[in-house]
Each structure stands twice: as structure tokens, then as C-alpha cells.
Length: 306
Image (tube, rainbow, N blue to C red; front, side):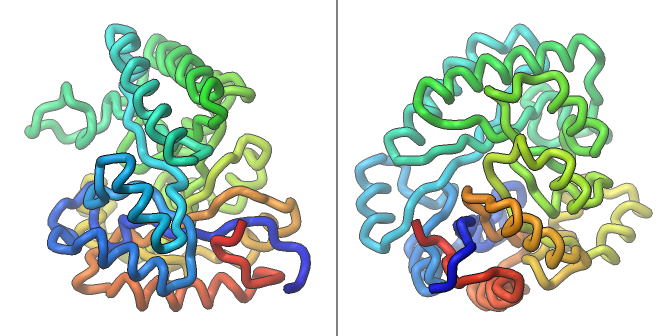
């Protein structure tokens, strides 16, 4: 094996079963997902909604195929101080579960103000409610507190900037990084959500590299995004339209991104994501082709190896 690659490549089960669009792959079983992951030669995945919820069963199921649970998404509602105590209690339970599973990062995203994810919103609303000054301060306070909980368990809070939320644009990402403690709040760098939110993915990587603890590699179909913008489509509608795909199948140039990650010796996990209708875009085949595409810029084939 050639020397030089420290990054570990894994894959997210969202390629097979949608999280935000529940009809995508809803009949797919978790056995099908992890069998495909094993066939791809990958050893890292995130928690999926079809996976067993019992820790012992999940451990045995993944271990039997040589797969590790890398992380699991955790929604938080820290922008409203009234929710801090209950949200932090839930965060501790989440951290305990991931720690038990051997994970090292917690994918974390604020849902306050979001059209689809904020439990306080009603179905007839049409816009994301951006944060005011008090909301930003409350969010930062909550994230720092959650980061301390993660650290207690030997893990890192990796903040997931995300389409359709209040931390979406490059300016919002910058502000979140400036307001939070760098030792407690890290960044989940997502190429697809960066582009969707109006950032240049390479520039975002360069600017915040030192805060990055975890990566999602996702591509964007620019023509679909432009059409959706003209129509005023919301985030979930954009997914239904097929705005996201796997690296190599969209408009993002991954060559300089991968080159920088290799040059900087990024040694964490990078998860392949497509988040599209698996009936139209077969997950295994798309992932296989995407891995071949990404390997062109890697100094060795080491996806998923420790």
C-alpha cells in the first residue's frame, strides 16, 4: 500500500433510505443496506432510520459485516433558551448511545426556525425564520454546553451546516464558528450543503479546515437547483426534484477538495452521500462509480480502513 492517505471513506445509509423524504427507499431493509456497504468494501456508516435501535443488536449486526457506526444526526433546538435543559438532557442520552457504539463524532444541527424540522412550525408556513441576535447567542450557548457533554464521552460535536436551516449560508457558517468555542464546537463539512447554501465548497474547506471534525461528500445537480430556485421550492421539495447526488455525478469539482484533504492529512471520516430517490438512482451502482471517481485523487485505496 502506498503511503499518504489517512482519511477514512465510509457511506451514509441515506443513499438507500431517505431521512427527509420518507418515501425514498421506504421498503428497503437494513440488511440490504449493510450488505451493499460490505460489498462496496466500506467499513463505516452512520445510523439510519431502518437500523436496529437496540444497542446490542446493532453492534452485532454491524460487527458481523465489519462495519463501524461513525455517527448519528442529532437535531437540537438551542436557539430558544426555553428548550435548553430538555435538549441538553436528550443530547446526553444521544452521546451515551454513540459512545457505547464506539463513535467519535456527533452530527449536530439546529432546527429552530427551519420550515420542515422545527416542531413549533405549522404546515402552512413557507419560509425559514432566520435567527435574531438573541437567537444566535442562545444557539452558541447551547452548542458550547452540548460540546462539553460530547467531550465528557470522548467525542466531538460536529456542527452540520444544512440546507433549509438557520445555518445554511457561508455567512451563517462563519458566524457560528465565530460565536462558539473552537475546543467544543467543531464543523461537519458537507460539500453538497455548502454549494446548496451558496458557498464555494473549496473556499469553505480552506477557511474552516482547522474546525473540521467530520465530512460528508455530496454532489449537486446545478440545473435542478437553478430550476428549484426559480420556482421558490423549499428544501424537501429540492430533494424530491433530485438536487443532490453522489460525487462525480453533479457540478462540484472534487479534485481540489480531495487534493487539499490529502495534503492536509485529514485523518477523520468522510462519508459518501447521495440523498436521492433510490428507485431512479440505484444506490450500490452510484456509490461504486462515485468511489472510483474519488479514488483518482487519493494516494492509496484505503476507504474505511483503520
